[in-house]
Structure formats: structure tokens, C-alpha cells
Image (cartoon, rainbow, N blue to C red; front, side):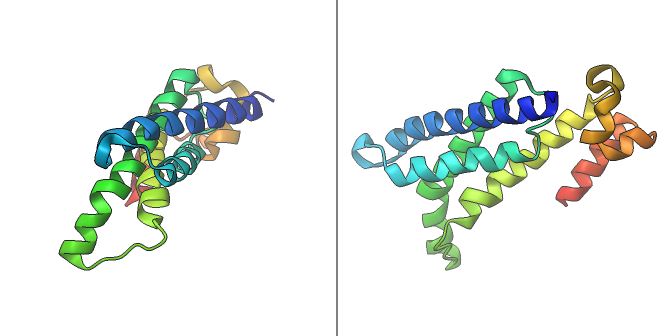
Length: 154
């Protein structure tokens, strides 16, 4: 149905945007302004992670592109800038890049879900609102749903 179509479209757009933004950020941040393929590979996956929380929400193509672009930027900045700082100052080694691939993009997706929940309505989702936001079918308001989404991040 429509939810499945939204998931496919949003995921594809987010992954593409994260890869593109990673190309730009990698070339900008790396020595000699050369792209690093590991940055791009990880950021592309980060685009999928970040859109996962909201793939079936009403985002439109622009929303999916924005989330993916931000995920690509976050992931690349995490690998190039943040990881060396954490290693040097805190002696914290993230050998698998979990923070940059899953952590920060996951929080981004969670924050996006707060935003999309805040404007969710039966007028927008129709009778399917309970499929996306189960408690809204039981009378929870959009504001209450957004608060629940935000508290889940904490």
C-alpha cells in the first residue's frame, strides 16, 4: 500500500542523498581534498539508519533527501573529525565506527520521528494512522505522540 511505497521511496532518496553529501564532506575534510571511499560507504549506510525511524511517515521527497544529507554529513564528520578527538582526549576507540554509523544517524532519525509525529493527523494518514502511530488510533494527540517519541530518545 501507500506505506510500503513511502518506505521504498524515502529509503532510496535518503541513501542516495547521504552518499552524495558524504562525497562532498569527505573531499572537503580529508587531506588534499580527496574523497575517502570508506567515508562514503559508511555514510551511505548511515542514510539508511537515519531514515529507518520515519520511512513510512509523510516526509515527501524533500524530507527524505534532507534526512539523508544530514546523515551523510554527520557520519563523515564523525569519522574524520570526531573519532580522532575521542581517541586522543578520552582514549575512546570506536574500532567499528558504531557511533558514526549507527549512533548519531539513529538519533537524527529519532529526532525526525518527533517532528513527523508532531504534525501527524487523521487528515494526513486517514484510517491508517494506527498503522504508523498505534496509540494515535486510541486517541493520543499528535503532541502527545511527539512527546512519547522524544522521551524514547532519552
